[in-house]
Amino acid sequence: MQSYLKVLRDYATFSGRARRREYWMFVLINVIVAVVLSLFDSVLFDDGAMVLSGLYWLAILVPSLAVSVRRLHDTGRSGWWLLVSLVPVVGGIVLFVFTVLDGDPGANAYGPSPKQTVAVPPPAVV
Image (cartoon, rainbow, N blue to C red; front, top):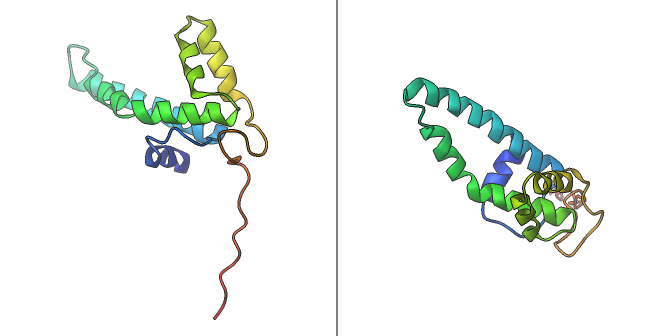
């Protein structure tokens, strides 16, 4: 849940890098929320309108793009690689493989590795 909230806090940050866990937890929670909202939509609206789930997908559009770009940055690729998903079938597979790959160890052109934690010295006792 913290990964999901981190993505929402950095909702319009297209720079930097995102770990696999951050990306895939965001995707998993989005799918769960979308299924629940679709169930509510089917109960509340008889004509098949997807009002709640549609509003939810609209609300998370920018955070989804941002975390996808940061995930591609973690693998050393430009965010423009998202456009490969416009190629039918093959594009989605290529993008899936890129998001599953492990990130570059150490720093790359898009910033330091999110896996490396910065050691914080303990506070001084007074």
